Image (cartoon, rainbow, N blue to C red; front, side, top):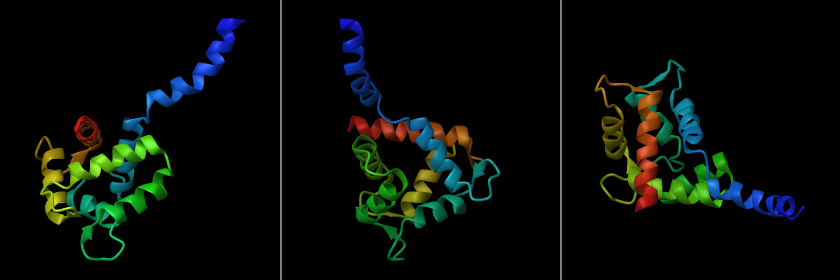
Length: 138
């Protein structure tokens, strides 16, 4: 009985320690970016996806705009929000405190590993996972 009680107490904690399912989040982001649902994201689709975060239409995504959007999409999951905020820093390739076309073009070039001018879901998931790993390591 003591083991059963301990398991009941620990189960929610163990669930929280597992963290968010990054592959699931990557798949959700990919599906939103793949606006024509053809299984690939081209540069204009990636630009359009990211620019949908741009609330004031200045062609740049501030950290505040990014925060508003991820909170709308994923709620107030502190662990996931922390990861996604760190990911923002990885997305800001030129470190100018905004994500803009220059950053998106650079991201696309890195994600498009086979250099065919489109990013397949597998390429995107790998890119996203590596970016999250870099973001959580830093």
